[in-house]
Length: 310
Image 1 (spheres, helix red, strand yellow):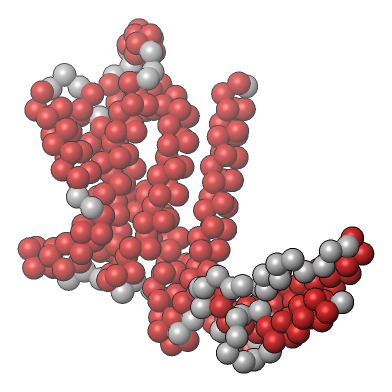
Image 2: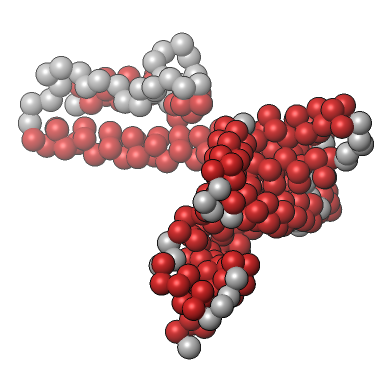
């Protein structure tokens, strides 16, 4: 049993607070939080014990001690490494946390309004750009191709900065942050909308045009009553994806001072110094908002599919 006492003494020295190896739970936590790989058990003494009874006698206390040390180390690790988390800044149970959440949610109105306005304008502009590109006029097709390629090649953040800072000097007009964001987002998205409408209209069979001409419908009436209703049903998923894309890209308007969700989160981080907690709430805000929009688009798809069958 001398070897057992000797190993027990080694374990006792390892669990202390001296300058020895990091065998104790406190040093395990310090090593884990510091990013180093801790040593949790002392190496067994070579040749210790000869009988089966001696081996089990040594193994049981060693396993029990390692289990206790691991449990204590895990508890201390969770409480020690997470001590700097400050979820109280967004805790609705406290007055300050509820006020911070209300402040973050106050940007939701401008995010939705900005995205809706921009997507409506981009749909109208995109359709106006797509229709000339479907005709026989080479000049009109050239305008469609040049517009799409140029606008699609400009990064949206650069376009936002150019519209807000450059357009007032270029056109001698005054523009606020809301309309600067709307114009930039609508212009950027209109190029994608033009391609979506072009693909949707071209997917309609030639027989639909011939049937419209057979009842003396002009080009405008053919597009309005025959072609576009069918094309919109086919491109509705793509239009929904563009609206989701617009909601996410609206966060870039925060760089010019638009008081939307991302701008509110940035301001709260500056005052509270808790980026992890605040930006986590921001992620959840966008997640819930986009899931709601996606569910609405799917419902509209099912509704239009049902109306088409009837």
